[in-house]
Image (cartoon, rainbow, N blue to C red):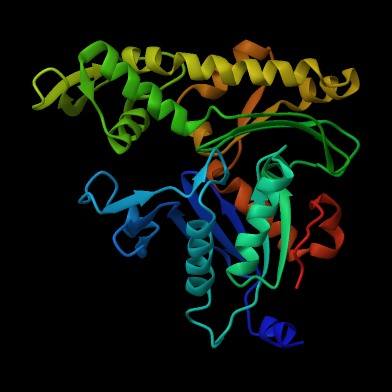
Length: 347
């Protein structure tokens, strides 16, 4: 009963609990938080020092007893206690401006398609322990499709390719459910690692994760640019141990990313091959929609279109597609409840 009373003083929220970034949607307000999924911990006393943007600034710059960790790996919880603390931080930040001693919101959280029962329960339990009154789970491709305003409840095929930080979710959706799908553990973080490996193998240069990501954003592409682009690559020389800077161009970075891009294309093709012919005809007519941060890689839509002989579109604001979808469900829980997964923890 007290939970219900506290619930009246709480904001219901939708969360995109991503490997790289977490976004929070508040019912009636829209997206209010967009922060990195990073937590800084003092290993001497296990105290959490910073969460989100403040913790991200510490990545690669901390003394040995302070570590900046990502509690989610490939879109699923890898560190339960740290994930719980991160969720508590988001919930308290949302309620900071509202009188609520003990916020008890209802929470809609996106999870990768096809996660195990154990992984699903870990997310539910972390959210419940963080203060959620009720926890609703939605599969990320469904949430992204809703956020992209695809007609998922109609008897027509809609195809979404959601490239996040830890996973690439490829799904064909019809009548409010996933018909065929692939969840691939190759996405944005793997592309960053490709650049790190390329620098090590070709230049004996050790790069940090943030440097690799910045290079990917600056000159990374899936197809050649009209004009050649270059950027400095700074790291530690593995031979001398000293700082080193070299110039790299877009062709070299494209070569580094090629394996991951091929893998994503194969996942899309495999999903189409498993799709019923009637729905394939719909996809051919309506095209494929790209969402997630990976959709921002320059030229990826054109590369995928050439590989599948199908029109490919990038969703409006692809980074926020998933959390916007969770928000739409949150705003109209009664009519969209059938798209949610069954949950165990309800208070």
